[in-house]
Amino acid sequence: MSSEAAGEPAARGRIVVISGPSGAGKSSVIRRLLERDPRYWLSVSLTTRARRPGELDGRDYHFVDRATFERLREQGKLLEWAEVHGELYGTPREPLERAVAEGRIALLDIDVQGAEQIRHSGIEADYVFIAPPSLEELERRLRARGTENAASLARRLAHAREEMAAQDRYDVVIINDDLDRAAERLDRWLRTEESA
Image (tube, rainbow, N blue to C red; front, side, top):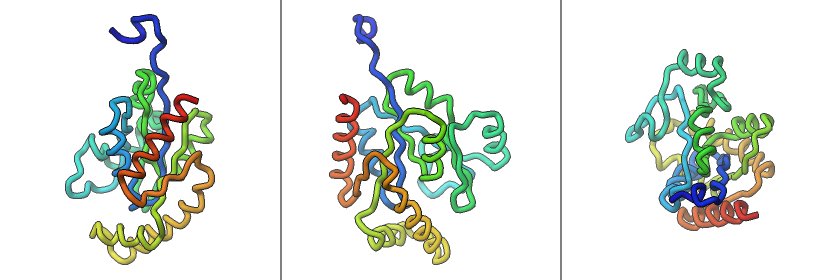
């Protein structure tokens, strides 16, 4: 029997915007949250970038061409969108609205530009910034991926500095110095905010 059927109100869904520089470990922290509680739900973004080895369409991203992305944007089917490193990224509106209506905690893994669009849209959300322990550690993580050439790495590090400068506009900053501890801190903060 659902709580609604028993006369209790359905759990209130909410949106949690999670940002941080590439290599900070946002995706890893989010995966840990998804393993902890079935109420967590990940919004799968659209992107025009090429699929990386091991990525699956519909799980990691919805991979689309630029024309499809622009058509969806023009039709108002994206909550937010941004161009990052020459590629387009966006949040599909409909599945997000459905998840929140079902009482889920919708996690949006989006960059600072996208977070600002959501903030200015008036949509109620919590804002979380995942930060690396240092820029040196961030550079080490990006190099370890083995997916960046020198120019791309330099661009990502410059972009990371810009994003890190925006962390004071977030409700909480989680330092990802240890994956399990970072996920635990974020889960605890979200539960505290939910009961407030």
